[in-house]
Length: 339
Ligand code: GDP
Ligand code: MG
Image: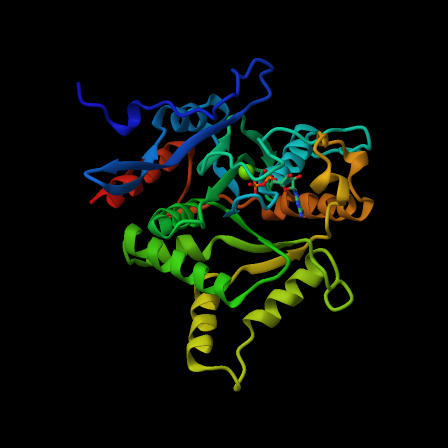
């Protein structure tokens, strides 16, 4: 029998079954590496069973799907941050959802330099929330990690991020310390590539335009210029995307394109999480070991991002995306990449 990508049940190594019923991160896309005739062959592998397990979950099936995605290179605290999102959603977005004694866990996050497998993971359990019109939507958390440490995987990274931009309602692009011109180029490149694969059409454009895109800057060092949080973040990003007469034509062009792709672009600036988080080998996710300023800012970011106004299901082909659509869409996308 021929093995197809769909036969592969991908699983984060070292994780057990979801015995608690609280959910677990399931890998739905993996970047593969293979040496064939002395050549390095890369590709995207679909974890169809995992994807179907999530998208055909009885809770997902009946509701429009809202994917909250975080993407960026490895060891920048993405999975760690998603742990806060999980905590909030598990509390059913009520009351005192983060206490000093709580521990942040869920998506696998790691100290040290070792990387957890690249690709896309989605938390297996959907969270049913109400949007601003009082309708129920299924919220899914998605973690995407690329490999920016190897030239030959550029195409895979681009494919990975382009796909997440297409299917997510909110895309958080996670960066350390500041936004550089390169980061803007990357976003333009990912988006142009996604348009190419998904097909140049008004539908594809609307689909990308619908994404709320947020540059999240970690370890922000200039709070006196731009304050922590969304206000400072939005002002900072606006400034970086500003077009002025002194800029080279290329820089102006890039900013015009990004403005067109993402009318809904914003930013958030987070302080450093504290020495214990970064340097203590024994750090196990306890909130009390983190800097208060970090905790307060993460809390407001999470509450803002998961507020009713932000829970907008993606629309493709004039139809709100359901779990079944997402399976079809991802399958088609991965197939197109193989051609
Ligand atoms: P990911 O590869 O981007 O998903 O990163 P992880 O979430 O696995 O975290 C990698 C390491 O970064 C862990 O040791 C975390 O404790 C640490 N970390 C988490 N958040 C931050 C942050 O905001 N700033 C810094 N400097 N380190 C962080
Ligand atoms: Mg991670």
